[in-house]
Length: 207
Image 1 (cartoon, helix red, strand yellow):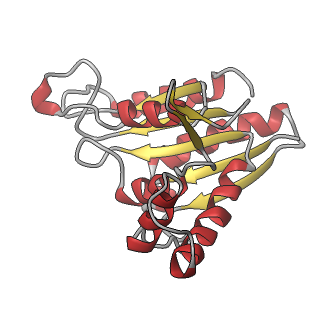
Image 2: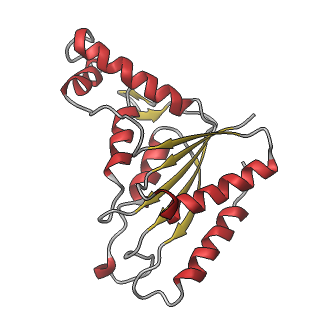
């Protein structure tokens, strides 16, 4: 049985192109394997805690700064619960719109919550940081309305896919597939581009 975590980073619900393309990918995976289980994580409905002082102090305690007790322990326990849900998945399907060249702040908050020592990454003085996840896959759907690959820089730069690709590999997800729907004002036929993105998502290698 394959467990899919569908992470929705757009607040636009049914109007979101990234969500729709991600669902097309998931539908294809379900057809190929009816035992697939999908857990949908809507970051705009999920009650994510702020990554505040106690959370940061809890993280630093793993590097020998302070003690993991009291309010720091309570903050860490919340982090562990959220992270275990992420770790339970075999395949991550993310629908990610571009916001101001980067990713939506709710997705960044989620990443900041779960990217913790001993949970998603380790550290060795000799070899540096290393991811703790093993045998995981990811499909990332990128959408944007201004930036498009190959356009002049005045149409934007890509701090969206560059960042997420780095983060997934940082925590140990090496098998990453990408689908893009990124029309700009220069795009002649956005609808065709969207249909092509749906088709491309369906044609990605099976999990």
